[in-house]
Amino acid sequence: MLLLALVFGVIFIFIVPPWQHYDEPTHFEYSWLIANRAGLPSVGEYDQPVRREIAASMVEHGFYRDINFNPNLLSITDRIWIGISQIGSKPLYYWLAALPLRLIETTDITFQLYAERFVSLLFYLLTIAAAYGFAVEITPGKHPLRWLLPLTILLLPGLVDILTSVNDDVAATALFSLFLWTGIRMIKRGFNWLRVLALISLSLLCFYTKTTVVTALVLAVIPLLFSVIPPKRKRYVWLALIAAGILGVLALVEYGFPRNWYQENTSSAPGYIVNKNASMGKRVLAFKYSPDSSPNRISQLIPVDHFDPSQESTYTIGAWIWADRSTTVNTPTLHIADDDLTRQVEVSTEPQFFSFSESIPPGSRPYKISIFSGALEGSQEISVYYDGIILVNGDFEGVTPVFGNLSGESIELGGSLLQNIVRNASIEIPGITLRRQAGEQMAKILPGDPQLILGLIQDPAPLISYYQVTTKVLFHTFWARFGWGNVTLLGYRPYTILGIFTLVGLLGAVIAFIRKRREINWELVFFLGISMVVIWGAALLRGVTSYIGGGYFFPVARYAYPAVIPTMLVLNIGWLEITSWVERYRRIPRNYQLAGVILIFILLDLLSLYTIFSYYSK
Image 1 (cartoon, rainbow, N blue to C red):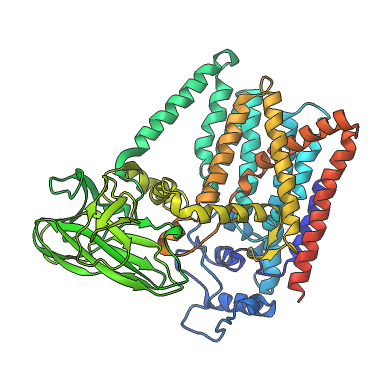
Image 2 (cartoon, rainbow, N blue to C red):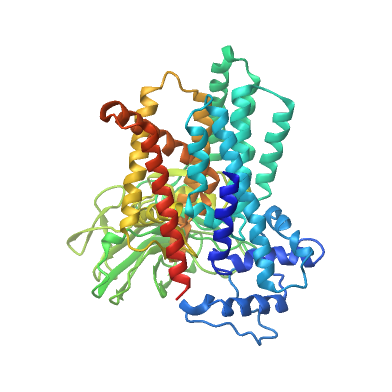
């Protein structure tokens, strides 16, 4: 299988043109700087001559043909564009990828890229070896999973495409796969100092490889506990894990910040306080300012079903606003694609309702409403308060609303009963948020903004389309989607077939787990299940924060590939279960059916290679 993986990997190395993987130019730049300069490069550092060489190679190999852009190769002062810089990412993969570059530093830049791809190929082989060791560890001798699991991972075209590219996902996938193998080995075989050293070492290597796998440091606790405690006392481990989970949640989160609202600046977030001047209920948003404070903002995404972008519409935005002393502040801001709509108003110490109306042209739609008081004058501390925020369809500027319920969903304006598009307008419904210090520390080691992501998780309504598209993208890229996500299999029928193939595997896995529930090693299931949920969950949520800025980023399966072994294990268990049923009731030998499973993978690989060749040969 390793020999087959070597051949398959080399084919992918050369069939995909240079630079045609996710961020490959800037991943290469990072490792090149490590190879050719002393120490790790700092954020913002670059080498103009090597950027010129990379960009020239990108032009030569048709990289810019579909994006209607050509870099200025003659630029002396302006940084030549080759993509988003990766400098600042965790350095382990780049340091290893830089090793061959030290020996060939005078060769052509494209040749150096291929040399780095061969370093990635070694990680691909390591992943296959880990999959085989994993399968051997959890199955008795001659069990079909021992060859089926590593072989199906080997033949997964989306995986081999990523693992033969210059990208830190390569090392993240390989090292986390080794970590999972070591973890289940400890659970199965018990405590051993060599295994402990291997587990801790791999979790540290994961930490220094990529943010997608830093959770290995926490997950390592599970096999350590289950390997130390004798079998008769395993229930104490379960109790300890449950208690640790509850205490961890209580230590990290707090209850009270208004649901459906998100903190965009955790370092100086507004308070959620009881105030006697609240327009309804008891609570209001309080923004406390001092001369040395940074601006703060909270936002709410607007569900798409409230708008018809095909025609012009008028909307009214408003809120009750007041402060500790008279000052000038901003009303709530309505954000559309190309503009931010707000007004400056004079407020006093008594609540007043301020509103304004705006016409939105066809083709545009508001995507977010935010509360940002703006720059306040003066050298004294001041608090500004907001309550009863509204966004309604129609021109009701200057009309004071009457709220029909405490949540503010129903309001009366000028004798008309309207639905308030703003949810939790009265700030009365509490939600869950990270404690400030916990959020700041987690943001340093995890991808994205954990505080913002937690708020968005609790507000799925405006993100339904995001979850739908992201699930589709994750599915496509997990199986077979190439380049920068732009090279899809010819036609969509293959993805339909793969969808059926996947559902059959999942259905079979559910049947197998129910049928064999008394024989299952639940310690292994828990360890692998938590690992899958963490990796896939992080991949699914990776792009939610892009909606806050009005953008749309849909993550791909390379962020979930570190969990490829347990993912494919579930599917393989399901396919084996279905084949056993077919053998029992249809008298078709299982070996023939498993040959059919492998044939599906081979046909997918051939179609993938043909797709890549056809796309890039134009």
